[in-house]
Image (cartoon, rainbow, N blue to C red; front, side):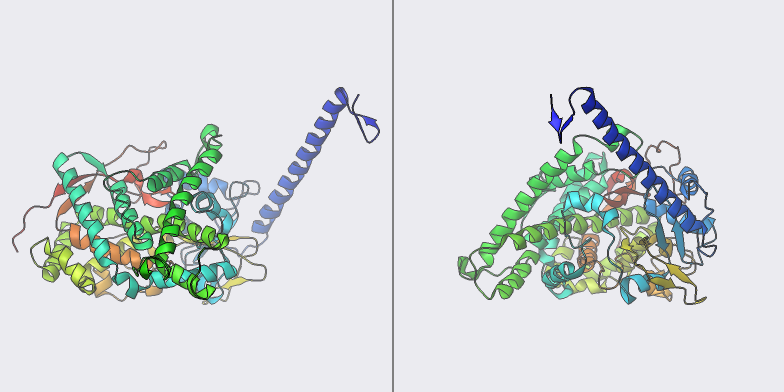
Length: 547
């Protein structure tokens, strides 16, 4: 006999007790579910001036999203859906759209207006919303990473790494970037000789990760030639990330996912930790003669040494753990923008030969007709990139049409966004505030013919610069935006005149829709916004030109 508090709980009594506990839990969960359901449905239906699509009394905006999903490719990135939502329901001029997606997703206010975006990112910066980001960033980098953390922790680490990502400092690293780009040219030559379809996004990812390894760690990862444990674990981690649209319960709740997340994190943090320890020893003036190379990691350690008052023999564990976290977020965010941007640059220029010809002529004018001269000239004088005006316009236009990411904030009680024209106030309390760049970038209120690829607009037209937000703005703007622009220019300088790359069409997703605005290389969600299927492409050597 088993007794607890004087009561016999053996046999059937244990069974009854378990059923009772489970029943109580289910009742509480059910009550909580319906209470929250009623709260959100009433909240959205109680305000007639709230800019939103038609709202269902029971299902909220889930039917609206299902309808949009039927009209677009099933695997398209969620932010690609947003311009169609604004347009379809006449909310483009409002600049804000509210969605009630509970319980599938958090209720949110989607901002597609530069002034409203300014209010939440610069005027009164709302805190980063960690919940939507954690599914991706926690497995990749861990807690308190620079993208999702707020407050004093963010301020400290942003200060630590700002010197390493300053434009003046990055220019000193151009020779190393050129070296990795020369390797990329050799790889592309092999692909051109083979005539086989190549996953272009995979190739550009290897290039940009090699650049990040050199810029941040002063390490030659050489992933363009052979696998590297850090990169393999990183790619495995991305492959295990849950997808936003997944109906197979085995894939959605795969029992191996937690173990793989743990294992890949262990591998990545171990490798980065070893690199950090190596740089720590080489940076300490009392060791190795104080060798002074300047990767980003070294500049961070300089700040650490100053804070500690000079020479120290050992990093404290908290600094080391947090530094590893930030290095991992640099690997993820640092490779991502450039690798996808290069893919879309080649894709768009392959469809507009006259624009490719203009870009090549600009490069000829700057670096001369000998293709091999560009690398040496950039190594000697990185400021030559400043003359690449049309190529820079191409980069800006690609980032306008295919922004890699957005900013997600969490609303606060008592904080309202204000429409400057009408004076209407928009609430943010308990809402995810999604500052979405794509619906701003394709809004004809700010851009002439926004769905057209026209780099010339950046040279010939008056641009509403506040409406261009691929890196967002304000204190939480992307720390690596200068690096992204520099490495993209270097890659263009070394590759545009050498190769013609044509994207191949792919099998449609389950709903049979395979294009967005007659474009088959649309963005999908793979950790961030990337070209569908890695943009499988045919690489060819560019034909000789008469200069």
